[in-house]
Length: 356
Image 1 (cartoon, rainbow, N blue to C red):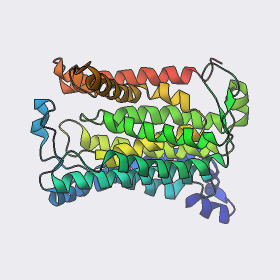
Image 2 (cartoon, rainbow, N blue to C red; image 1 turned 180 degrees about the horizontal axis):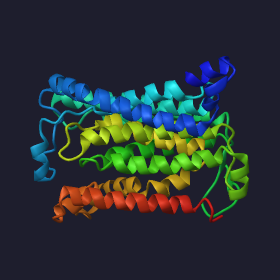
Image 3 (tube, rainbow, N blue to C red; image 1 turned 90 degrees about the vertical axis):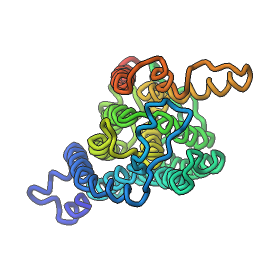
């Protein structure tokens, strides 16, 4: 909105600041953070009144989690509100990537909200059926991917190699949708402990803030041997808004959590990161930067696969953060150590920008 107004006024005087992505990115972070901190208490109070007993807790999970009964969920609505308002204030309305990523973020958030609502109203941890949810996610991701790919190429890039590896053509839409859906659900599976998903999302967003800026700059992208995507630089505004909104949420989600983000937040944030990776053509690098989320998802896949075929469990409990809890690690120990892993993986992912 402010960029549009400044443009209409000819960027006169101080309004010239709105030309710069870095200024709008910083403003987006501040806006999302301040808005989240302001609406948080009232939002949490409203959720507590509306939900009564709060989010259902798995009876087969760690016994320490039973003390969390009564904590409201759907805190992701606070995150989505902060991101959306911040984006509408500071985004470039003509940028297709921002609209596509925002569509996917809000769309996944809505799917997550319906899942959370079903759990709360039915007092069950089941929620919407997995098939229905995945179908809805693929529809949203496919539409968003199509919009993104009308501006980018369909070439696949991999780390440690200069230039595209293969042109996927129309199959790229299916590939892009898979990346977005997979990462949305990976973040969703990670969101099982207070603060566990929030900080790794912030770390991954900061990493992609830098990647987006470099990919959107022809000089830097040519020097680094990474794909140049005209307009991708404005994705730094979205990454910044995610950082600000997630920091505000973490303020209330710090142990002991006053609210859970629920599927509403985790699906939305994971979908947003997947969409940003597709827009910057760094889908494989996302797997490195977000390696913690990948490990969480893989632990569930491995557990289910082996249990169905052998009747034995590879992990004491899945996702893998519960495995470490069952080994005797305290919740805060698991969370902080996983944060460290997320930070190291982000640095590893960023190092691939130069090692080509």
